[in-house]
Image (tube, rainbow, N blue to C red; front, side, top):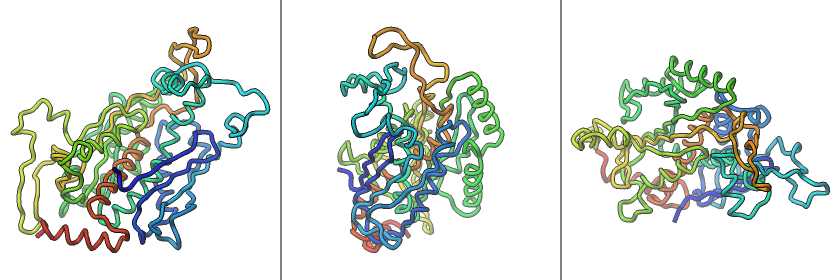
Length: 397
């Protein structure tokens, strides 16, 4: 059972997205600006489509917050879709007064065919509206709240682009180690460069090649995939559990990140590299430092062992396929006629990797915040703080 859970509702071209977040502690300082900051980050990035020119996502709290702090009751948020007035007839909740053209041309790589068959729809719009990545705005809103909770306890969640198409960026190992001293400034400079980049990549040369790849791909009417990496710093030892398969934090993080649109594989730490190495090369030695406590000189495991956090930064990578909607559509079949037909074309992006990293942050933050709530309980922030300090004292110098 999840302790910190969220639900979302709403379609891509409906009036709004609605988000409900359950089991936030009372007394957490929270403003709409905290959420809007991450919503704006999700909308940026070279390669985004025309929808981002229309929407300017802003959240509105409609329950669970009073005078700048959470109440302990469910948090309800709304993100209005500015494009809704253009879709009022097509997406109305009431029966239409005039015939509405159905979408029947199926897109390879999307949920169109399976969704239409599963739910017995004869109009693929009933599927694509909810399967759309517009839903990730709701995830980012919920994740921003989870991020605010984690930040209250010193936990920071970051992401960056490590690959777009065939172009891979340099990703310094220091980013995945517990920072100390001068390393802290170097790491901070890296993340500042990420946020200043159009593709959220601190490697300037790689970023320039990525932008050119996206530009050329757009000109060719195609799409590009890639890889993003999420890193969470100052996560305490012992979140998750080794005792049951569904309580292992490894699996929960992989499910959370793997559920993001276009993500087809998830890597924890340096799993792909480690699969072809000897155990003596892969596993992270354990050290005790009288001043700093338990330490690891490496972090190949990505901050997770046996389903639990190790105290090292948690490192998760999402591998994204190119998005499914193509300007020059692939051959397909019409759902209604069963005859060959080019796939439906819906307004979409060319490359979503910069935005996908922000969504990845949200899903990692939600998963870690859930595990944090399970571990430390408490109905108020003050109570959690007492529990947290007591626990840290059991293993810190």
